[in-house]
Length: 153
Picture 1 (cartoon, rainbow, N blue to C red):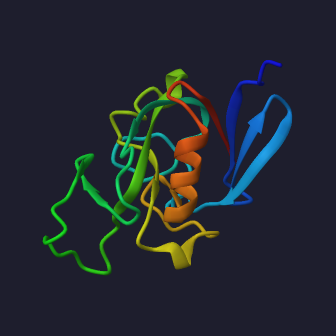
Picture 2: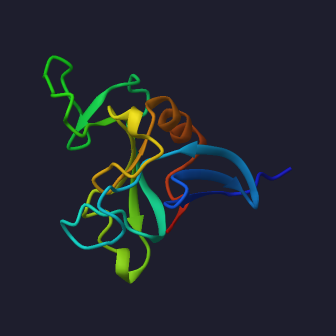
């Protein structure tokens, strides 16, 4: 039996990411989108909407809680402030597929783990889709590069 291709559906209103196989929801996660609202403007720190794909997966086999800087694992001896907006555990780097969101990759919009897990479920990011570290690792293992992603208001 052939498995249905997976897609990711992100609802900004519900702060939820749903993994679907065909039309069947197989997993739903709480997320956090931008505290600055929706949009694709360069430097806006807003979450873009529309059609995307996972352009690159980064962090395979990294330990949970690994901190990434410029998409590279940081030396754990480097200190960071609890206030920092850290990219942790895994990175799913998004490519925009429409004219209005084609700059998504250049804006470094990811689905990633965070050090602000207590804010998951409310808009709190700087444009990216934040997940708990456990959840982003699970998602990373569920999907492939090129998986379609839909972000809706």
